[in-house]
Image (cartoon, rainbow, N blue to C red; front, side, top):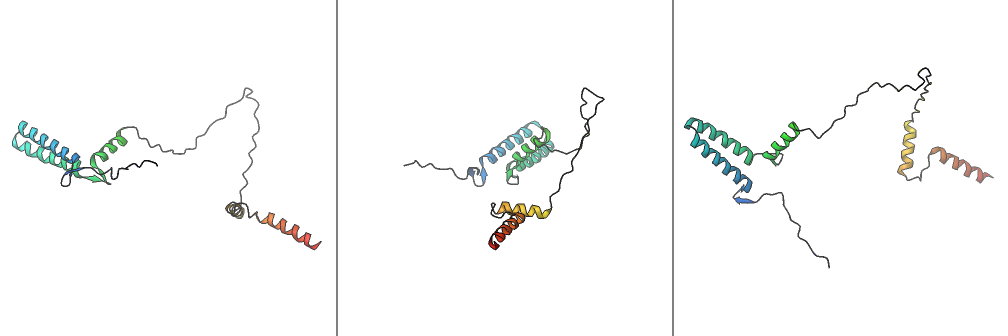
Amino acid sequence: MPERFIVPQFIDIEDRIWGPITVRQFIIILVGFLAAFIAYKTSDFALFIFLAVLIALLVGIFGFYKINGASFHIFALNFIETTFKKPSLRVWHKQHIRTEEFKSKDEGLEKDVFVTPKKLISSRKLAELSLVIDTGGIYKGEQKANQENNVSFSEKNI
């Protein structure tokens, strides 16, 4: 009898430690309080108020703001990676580049190049070929069917 394994569910949901606050958000808030405390001890009151508002704004954005369901820090890291590093997406812009053929050892001798035009297939022929493919070869095409019908009709009349 095969052993049963428990498959973890909801692995992308973060653990909550206090109400709706997750561990990541709690750590971001603690770092924000630490930065505000350092700003309080090292600056005068007017600068402290400005820094405290700035720190609270950054804590709110990095802790609670989500873009397309992802946390802001993930969005910021992806933005930095795709902007400043070499982008991994390569787009090919087709350009017609004139090239010259290599000349042979005998530069005086030039060979004539004959270009044969492509034969275009009519839409009726394409429709018939697609019908042959769709039916798995049961339908053999109008010309083949007409030939088989003419052969069978001439055999019956004999």
